[in-house]
Amino acid sequence: MGACLGACSLLSCASCLCGSAPCILCSCCPASRNSTVSRLIFTFFLFLGVLVSIIMLSPGVESQLYKLPWVCEEGAGIPTVLQGHIDCGSLLGYRAVYRMCFATAAFFFFFTLLMLCVSSSRDPRAAIQNGFWFFKFLILVGLTVGAFYIPDGSFTNIWFYFGVVGSFLFILIQLVLLIDFAHSWNQRWLGKAEECDSRAWYAGLFFFTLLFYLLSIAAVALMFMYYTEPSGCHEGKVFISLNLTFCVCVSIAAVLPKVQDAQPNSGLLQASVITLYTMFVTWSALSSIPEQKCNPHLPTQLGNETVVAGPEGYETQWWDAPSIVGLIIFLLCTLFISLRSSDHRQVNSLMQTEECPPMLDATQQQQQVAACEGRAFDNEQDGVTYSYSFFHFCLVLASLHVMMTLTNWYKPGETRKMISTWTAVWVKICASWAGLLLYLWTLVAPLLLRNRDFS
Image (cartoon, rainbow, N blue to C red; front, top):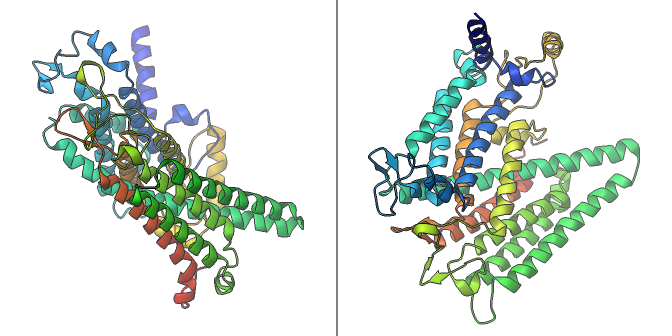
């Protein structure tokens, strides 16, 4: 009898995972919008995949797997799957990251297609978006297990180029989020300064603007010092000089009188944030150059191939400073996508989100009831607050971007080697140029399109 009651209790808990929001978790949290809770849980799924990828990159994982006789088949040259055993090489290094990120990208791409044209929570598909979390987790686990049974062949080479394109697009999304963040920051502090009639807010804006520009100048000096040589590394010199020139140009454009008249909130704070981010992307690009003398991050150089030897012939992944910083920026931007509600109309239009409307009485009553019961409340009965499909597409791009970040943008070779190529360099440099053009467009668009409202 006790076992039956226990089973019923477990089933009641499992039913919470299939509802509008996981009541087990939400009962411990204050009342939240259903739209926010759903985005956070989907983001948690992505972070879970990132964590698994990081674990599989750890050098000690292989030796631990070989201690389990029912898991691994000895030998480096055997197929991925052999008589029920798994070649542990497929569970380690860049191959594990490629398969894990393939699973998460496929998972979110499925929801991208499924959630097309959902306009409100009254759509039956909205219940799938905001619930059934247990079954979604099972789908993700199933995709992950299936991905590890994909034979190597040309999979990693083809998936590498998918990662290049997706990462390029996600870098642009990161820049859009930074523009939005800097704009909101500048607008709020200027508003505080006017309300309080205090110069401290102006001093704060000046301090951070100066700090970001000083960091950018220091980055330029360090890149010239470590990634160039007097008699060589001409590509690095050109990239650094061009991006420095472009950043100076957009900074000047941000404070032009006509731009200030069209956008009073435009200023050097936004330009300094974009400049610092551009210097980071440039640094990341220089760290991918496949020449030992121009890239101090390369551990071993054999011709045009970078080989990192690991135990039993398997490659061992290493993380350099640009990869660590890139991973931190990725985590912050992905969380920002989940939590953000911009007050910048251009960004809302580009990111397929809406400004937070004033709460109706019915919604306020629903929030009060939800607060008492400790659960999420539906705030999308009259219309969704973000595009479900675009949100999932952003997570697809995020999966591809983190795949390239964790593997240092190295292209897998025919053997167990990681080959550094110019592809990653040009993708990052072109992304930095496209980002600067995008920011410049936000400055001059109100001047060129006077009939449109950019307030």
